[in-house]
Length: 113
Image 1 (cartoon, rainbow, N blue to C red):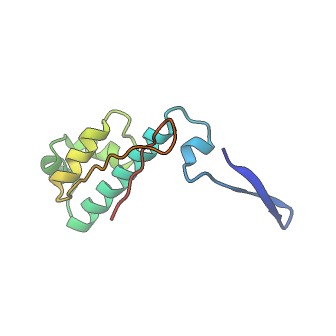
Image 2 (image 1 turned 30 degrees about the vertical axis):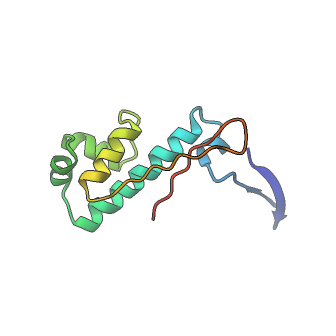
């Protein structure tokens, strides 16, 4: 959770954790952060490639209404695996690295290069 770090012009400014979902206390915050990062990259790819929603849907293997919802931030009905498959179909390589955690519990991170 974030903590108050200072006051600027009488307004308390809080440093975030880097995960807005966690800062808001949303359940499954880390999972949502990963999924939202994948969705942001899908939206960038669709724009970069100049695809219509229909074209993007055909390419990603999902119907146009799901593309529309996805681009409006409605991605709870799509798994991380399906989002990664969409990125593959849009021309992205996905690399998953697994390493032992220094702590007793590991964590997930998403790195877009």
